[in-house]
Length: 443
Image (cartoon, rainbow, N blue to C red; front, side, top):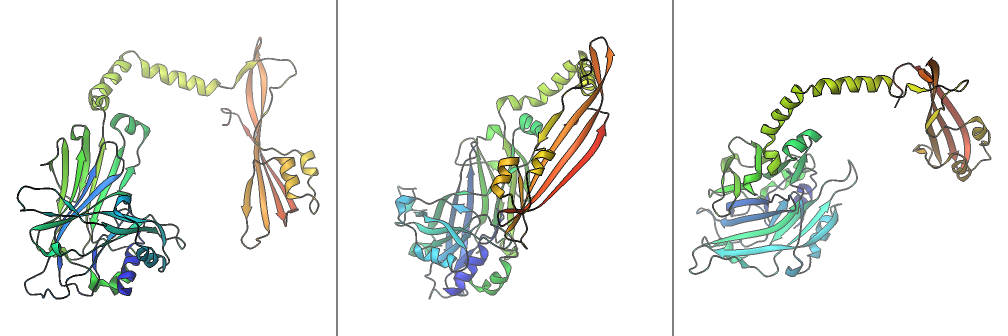
């Protein structure tokens, strides 16, 4: 039990969506293997919660004994899992297990657990197993920061696992496997947002996993010689665009059981042992208008080019940058008003802040609450209030008639640092940086 707990805690501290997914037995050197195995993620065009089905069976090689085979199996899953309240309450021992290892349990419950006889006449439905399979979802805090959620699912032993006519299945919603791919606004507008979906098996390379995994590796359940696959079902295939599938051995085909659904699959190679095997798909859904993009975009460029739209736009932008903020109405002996941004503290305000007398509350009342605050760990009772502001003063000359043009701008960057110790001002430092601009008015 201690060995199983250590391995579970280690493998579930990963922060990436393609983290460790392995089966772990309750006893050392399990006499059985997992196979066949099908890990299937179902994706809809709404891109809401992804539903995962894990279908498997247990195989005992002919040269091994059946004695002591009956035992619970742990599934280490790399993301948050959603439970079904109708199956019962959570298993407190799982929460205690992870919390004793310094992990923070954030959710727990039970997921759907069912069996199916492939050869029973007159039925093809799954038979639910009462109570389902308990799970706990948790994160690890401290150190290098908060990790993404991971889950530990305990699969209760069922005699039908050893019956080759039966398949077992776990079904649960999960979040964290799907990640948005960064893109420009033009890419999102013309081709729609892109996403990455990752499924993996035996991914245990992360630094938080490997030491404890290496210590408890004799509990990992290996794959049998039966078929094993990672599968992704993408609904609404007429509006689906798959950009990339990794590795190259991944295969895309129409689903045999679902209408308008494409399936991407990858066979797991048993000969790879515990080498990580990962299926990664980059995809996106497009609308009807976006499907016309390859036709509409060249047409729009052609039309704009013929009417001189590009030339007109370039000339307008240059004139706007050159003269924006420069032309004004001339008023004798009067300069245009200055502009201030941020917080600019004048001399009178600074003179009213006295070290050793003025309190923190009085500083805020005088200078305002738009302030940056710094904390020095070496001085826990001291903090520095930083006020920043900019004053822009234009200088103009008369051009013709009632028109005047700004010839340059004087820019003053003000920064005032007020050190407060034990709620009383200890020091005040003011810095002013002056510069002159002759180009466009500074932003």
